[in-house]
Length: 197
Image (cartoon, rainbow, N blue to C red; front, side, top):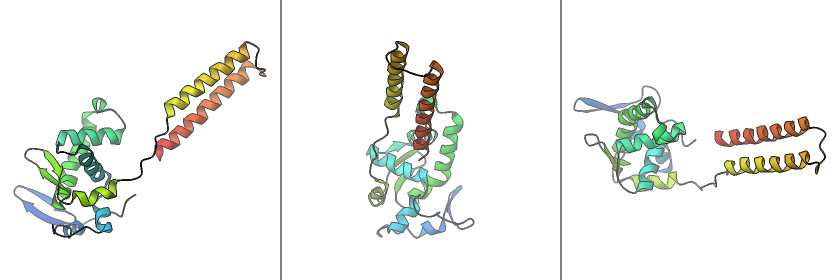
C-alpha cells in the first residue's frame, strides 16, 4: 500500500464553486501552490487511493486526454476483473460517482489533472510529470496459468493413455484419477494465491 490515509474523518476544507461545492481534504490543500515541487510524502498522499492511481496511469499510457466514460469503463473493468463489455450499470455507476464527487476534483485541485466537468474531459495536469515516476513499478512477467493448465491436461492424458495401454504400471484407475484431481486442485490453489497478491 502506498503512503498513509489522506485525511482523518472530519478534516476537510470546503471550497464553494457555484452550486456544487467541492470538499478538498485539508492535507491536500497545501499542495495547491503550482510552482512548488512535490515531496515523496505528498506524492504518496495524492496517489494513496487506487482510483487516483488508475486515473493517472491511464492518462499516462494514453498520452492524450480521455472522456469520463472511457476512464470509468477502464477503472470499472480493472477493479471487477471483467471485460468492458461485461460491466453492469451498477459497477460503472459506483466508479463514476466516486470519481465525479471526490477523486477527479481532488486531482484537478492539486494540478495532477485538468478536469473539465462540463465537457467530461480529463487531461494530464502540470503536476502529472512529478507523479508519474511514483506509478512506475518494475513490471513482473505474468504467470502463464493457461499454459500450466494445458500442460497438466496434456501430461495427464499421456500418462493416462500409457497406463490404460499397460505401458506404465499404476495401482488402479482410481489412483490415477485421484492423482489427476489432486494435481489440478494444487495448481488451482496456486493460481488463486497468485491472483490475490
